[in-house]
Length: 130
Image (cartoon, rainbow, N blue to C red; front, side, top):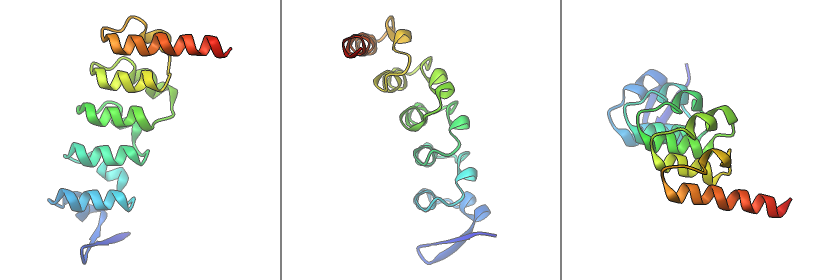
């Protein structure tokens, strides 16, 4: 079984998942330890850190915390996940997807005027470049 030493204490995967100290779990993520288990961590901060590593994005795309979903939007390359996130209820998640230039037509009539504006400018810029 794989182990990691953090602050002088040795942890296996089961122990790191049960560790109460969020900072210890975050350090485990930094070392890419137990990432698949930490996808389900109780802390949105830990789940966000896992998403930054590009692990479990297909699960984290549906996370209850918008900050986790926004991180998935920032780091994922899978078009099917971006298609899910472009419909997100949270405007910041949609903002990130639009800023990345994904399916700008979708955002032309977004309820958030800033997102719609990003889409209009992105489409205009791509037409000029073509």
